[in-house]
Image 1 (tube, helix red, strand yellow):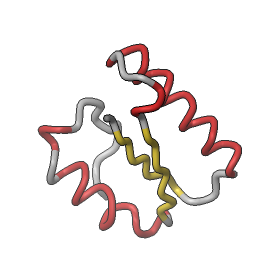
Image 2 (cartoon, helix red, strand yellow):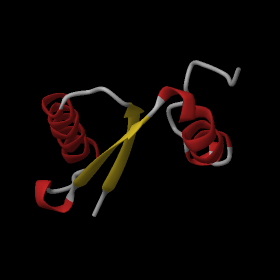
Image 3 (tube, one colour):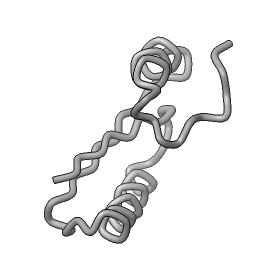
Image 4 (cartoon, helix red, strand yellow):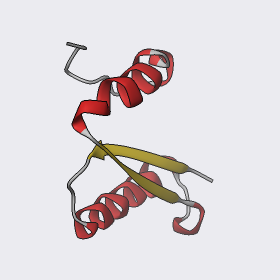
Length: 76
């Protein structure tokens, strides 16, 4: 029962978000063998000025052992 939460800079359209959710669903079906009906995808908008405090620090830096694709940036 994979549930994926994607946090993005705010500003993407609903169509873009749906395409992201569709592509993530396909990837999980292929890579993890999950059925489409077992997958859910949420997309959360984050304002750029809140990124470090609300995403980078709690979700990336504090949980580095669970981040399998590391970002190519470091905190300012």
